[in-house]
Each structure stands twice: as structure tokens, then as C-alpha cells.
Length: 84
Image (tube, rainbow, N blue to C red):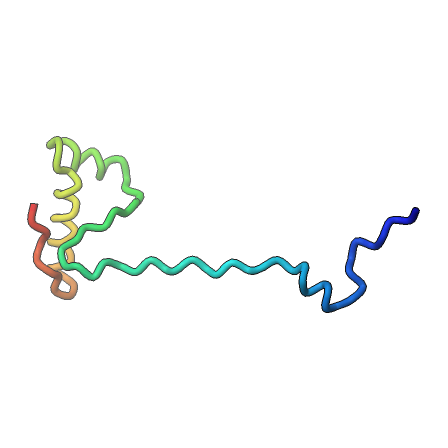
């Protein structure tokens, strides 16, 4: 007995076998709430990281404060600092 062809010979039958495309995942919108900190991943030189970590806990806040200060000197105004 001969094996039947694997491909449907009828185009209408072929449509029945096409996989359903999954809708794209929704794009994550940025937070609209003011003063909410975002978790990010950045690459920092080891020396810069050592400098901020030498005073112990709170080094991430110190980096954030330093970046805010640098922006305030040369960029547009920012929203008030996040309450700690």
C-alpha cells in the first residue's frame, strides 16, 4: 500500500493545517507614578564601583544622587529625589 502524500493537495485543506500565529506580547509601559525607581542593569568600571561601595551600604543611592547632580548641572530639570 502506497503512503499518501504528506502535503495536502487541496489548498483549502492546507489552510486548515497552518499553525495559528500567537499575538505579540504587549509592550511593557514605563511607570507613570512619580518618584518610582526602576530596576536597571548597567556596566560600570570597577574603579567607579569600588569608589561608591567603599562607604558601605547605600552605594546605589550615592550613584543615583551623583547622576542627579550631574544632570542638574547640565540638563533639564528632574523630578524631586525619591524619598528614602
